[in-house]
Image 1 (cartoon, rainbow, N blue to C red):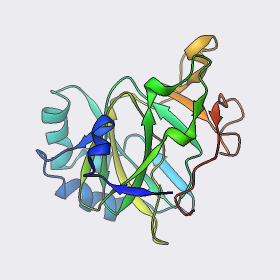
Image 2 (image 1 turned 180 degrees about the vertical axis):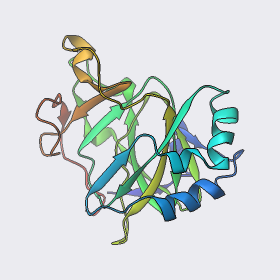
Image 3 (image 1 turned 120 degrees about the vertical axis):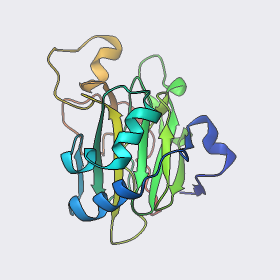
Image 4 (image 1 turned 90 degrees about the vertical axis):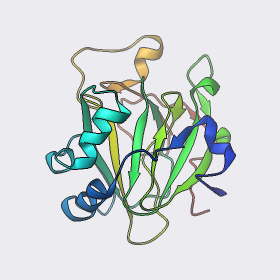
Length: 207
């Protein structure tokens, strides 16, 4: 799969680089205070990350003082497996090089299926952060090296926590957690209750 630079103009419809925040303290905490699992691990809210000076700047500047959560997605992965979207932007902070596979919510079909051939891959270099727009389909980052990836995930507080209600008809059937709409691939190893709607190849950056 072709991997473009995050500075490629093709990324502009999916998101933008965040340059008005100092990410030094968050990147250091990601490197020293978060684990590196064999597979992929995700935690939506980590006190050690939320205590950093970066987190304060993100809440003040990037979210206009709204409550946020700062967590991580670390591990080893080369495949797409699923796509998700939120009702808001997400900021990804790369403590290591990471590849983001992204697409557009506008390309989801009326039956909530989506063709993976429409997706593109971009390299987010270590030390940089990208805002992923609310209409951008995304999922776990991918790693280019055996050492894996470490990426900080910043979202509005409460996102990706367990649901309180049941969700079934229409777009509601995609809701798998609070503020999380997910479309799975049949070969992605997702929860069997997840809606399987990805059409085509389960994209692999190693191919």
